[in-house]
Image 1 (cartoon, rainbow, N blue to C red):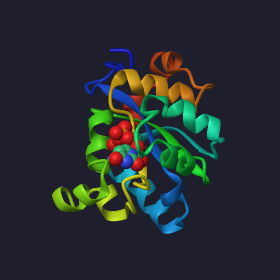
Image 2 (cartoon, rainbow, N blue to C red):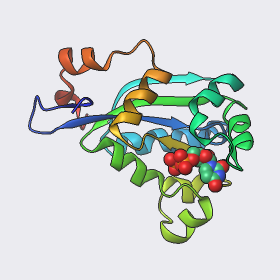
Image 3 (cartoon, protein in one colour):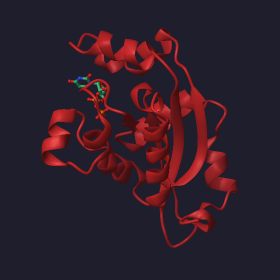
Amino acid sequence: MILSTRRCARVLQLTLAVIKPDAVAHPLILEALHQKILENNFVIVRKKDLIWRRSDSERFYAEHEGRFFYQRLVEFMASGPMRAYVLAREDAITRWRELMGPTKVYRARYTSPSTIRAQYGLTDTRNTTHGSDSEESAQREIAFFFPEFSIDQWLEKEEPCLRVGH
Ligand code: UDP
């Protein structure tokens, strides 16, 4: 698999996680989410604070163009600072999405009250976090947010298993 390494007993997978502007705006929520990442044994491979231009937002969410929430979404995502992470652990993609919970906040509160979106989400759009949903999207999204980061080089040269759980 492109985004995984089998160098040690565990197979580490990379994913892209983003803390969206609604959550970054509240320092205590930002800190709680950062702690959640660490508590769940993700290795923070890269971390970046950034602000999108509207054109970045439109490009990233191009697949949703035309949907009823698209304009609201692209405006929101360009409305303030975000924090992006490249995270590694076993089953990173699934695990981060499980921690986030369902896209829609009301559904998250009803079906999975302990998830991030249930606890901190404001609306279906202002839902605190993003996470890649497949290895293909993780690869594309990591390149979008971290164009200077080489996944191949990281898998080749670093020794990520040593740092899991630390
Ligand atoms: N979104 C929205 N209304 C909806 C569905 C999605 O505002 O009814 C926003 C929301 O911020 C979501 C993003 O669009 O996180 C991308 O939607 P997707 O279906 O890819 O959900 P995700 O993968 O983020 O759970």
